[in-house]
Structures are given as C-alpha cells and as structure tokens.
Length: 150
Image 1 (cartoon, rainbow, N blue to C red):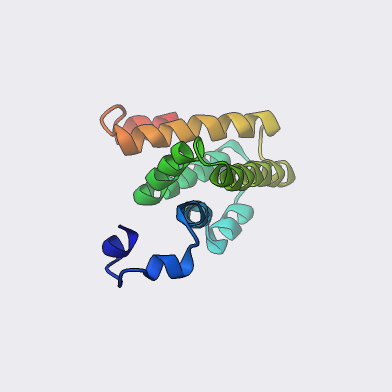
Image 2 (cartoon, rainbow, N blue to C red):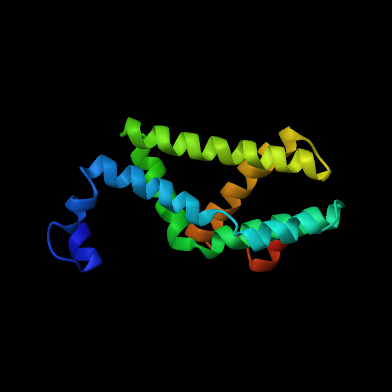
C-alpha cells in the first residue's frame, strides 16, 4: 500500500523499512522533525522582547506553524493512536515529545519571558487541543476566536 501511494515500484518500501513497526517509528520521528520551527524562526524569537506582547507573538507563531502543517499534525495524531498498540512507536514518540516539552521549558526559563515551567506545560497542553479543534472541527472556533484564545 505504501509503494502504491508513493507511486514507486512494488517492494521499494521494504528496501528502506524492515517491517510495519519500523516504517511507523521512522515516520513518527520524521513528522515530529518537520513540526519544529526553522532556525530563522528561532533567531527571530530570541531577538524579540521578553514582555507579554512578545510572548503572545511567539504563541501565535507556534499555533499558526503547527496548524499550517495540517497533514503532518494529523499524521502525528494517527501515529499517537497507533502508538497505543506499538511499544516501539510509543517509545519514539514519548522520547521526542518529552524532549520537545523540556526544550521549550528550558528555552522559556532562559529567555526571561513571563511565566514558569508549569505555565509552559499548561500552554503546551492547551494549544495542542486548540490545534486539534482547528484541524479536525474548524467550525468550533472562528479564526478571530482562535486568535483571541491564543
């Protein structure tokens, strides 16, 4: 099925992936990499102020960036569901996401932005669900409501 969807010769995927678990584990790692901000975005964030307005701009960028990669984020949600049945995939996703959360906490604490580690973790949880709403049921909140919530 992967070969057909990718329009490559039959057997191509098996040259790169030992089995379905391997394919899903590597896909999980790759999708998560693509959701990360690029270096220019990180530098722009570092150069901005440390006040509430700068923090709000950072949060808007994050929600817009992740929402803008709709297929990737939805794939990550599918992979999370699949991870409930596949321990190897669960381990990869758990490690990647835990590292990302801790990197966000460390960045936040080092930047002088308002709030503490708990606030960062709560924003992570709240924004993830806001993004899920936006991508799966976009009529729940209008664009203006989403912007106001952020």
